[in-house]
Image (cartoon, rainbow, N blue to C red; front, side, top):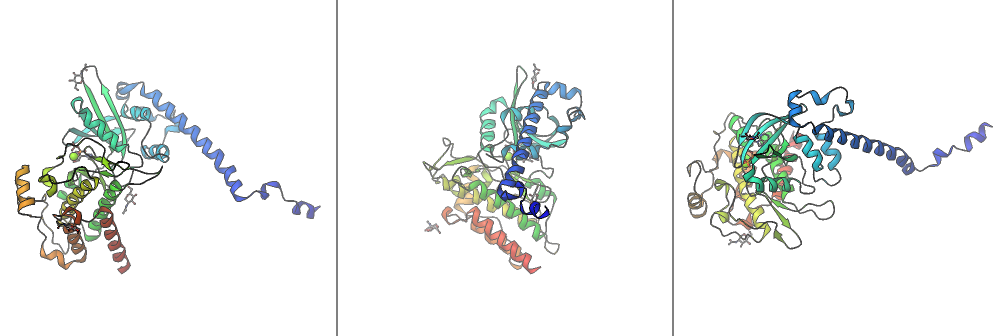
Length: 400
Ligand SMILES: Nc1ncnc2c1ncn2[C@@H]1O[C@H](COP(=O)(O)OP(=O)(O)O)[C@@H](O)[C@H]1O
Ligand SMILES: *[C@@H]1O[C@H](CO)[C@@H](O)[C@H](O)[C@H]1NC(C)=O
Ligand SMILES: *[C@@H]1O[C@H](CO)[C@@H](O)[C@H](O)[C@H]1NC(C)=O
Ligand SMILES: *[C@@H]1O[C@H](CO)[C@@H](O)[C@H](O)[C@H]1NC(C)=O
Ligand SMILES: [Mg+2]
């Protein structure tokens, strides 16, 4: 009897490990899907109450204990759940319902198109960029770029939602992203200095973000190459662990790989004059070739690396924080002034001698020089910069 029982195994053990996996994973995925559908239905129902309902009941009312399933579902999880497939953002209805539940708390920034606010969504901080209805095209374009398939990356500012709010006479256009309490790289460098390890980590994160933006990835899991066109320290956010995320994609252009062209009709000289590459300033850039825009981004990256490196503290020595060309042009310089300094006199930010005596500073100064060559085709690519920095960091780790 015993022998019979043991030799004739129960059918379950005859299944291959693949089949066992299918038995376990299948129902689990099904249950998860049900939970998600339920969750989104609840969210859109609540949004009908609108902003007023939300304001009346305070910010905790929605996370009430009678909705246990909503507890602990953060924005991050929600976005991960819905975007792991296509990577192009939350469904529009979900975006809208999130936007309608946000309370604005304080104004944190002012840029080209209006104000940026810190807002709260169910106890989480979010950043809300508010455009007026006159800037609808800018708002639409930025939201469109952020929702480019497969753009999401830890070094690109995380997009959450876009919505338009109409109160009858006035339309406000909202663009909601992750909030970073350190603010822009400009603000961070103004207030902080770093050691060499932190400097390399920060520079590497920006190069990694730019390399991802610039990369054409083919296939269904692919993304088009994107050029930023307004890269500068005010358009980069600093995260709590000292790595960065590239933001303000409002002026970006995408590469149409089938025709090798740029995706919008060209308004050829946009961006911030101080950070414009020589070929942009003197209008010699080939605006029909997508790579030209990437090279202009790399030039600006060189200036940003210089800003970061001036704030690296080695043996108690570092510089005051200044914008590039602070000593060559006035605040808010004209194109003509920039062109004289950058194209004719071929000036670049000063590289102090002491940067040659420390290996990390030396690596950074070599990279920035190779970013800001007058000859655009001679400049490094973002991918090359990323690899150089990541190799350098690995070799430093080996030494320790
Ligand atoms: N996600 C964010 N977290 C924290 N601060 C932000 C965030 N987004 C923008 N800011 C602040 O607002 C400023 C303007 O934002 P930005 O997106 O560059 O707007 P604009 O297109 O008007 O220049 C930034 O320089 C930064 O100081
Ligand atoms: C709509 O909002 C604008 C700006 O916030 C305000 O000036 C205006 O009075 C509002 N209109 C109504 C009808 O509430
Ligand atoms: C920084 O934090 C992000 C999450 O916000 C994480 O993915 C990343 O690995 C961290 N990087 C470093 C170098 O600590
Ligand atoms: C620019 O750099 C490229 C690559 O290094 C080189 O082939 C080309 O001759 C240079 N052009 C000029 C005008 O110097
Ligand atoms: Mg900006």
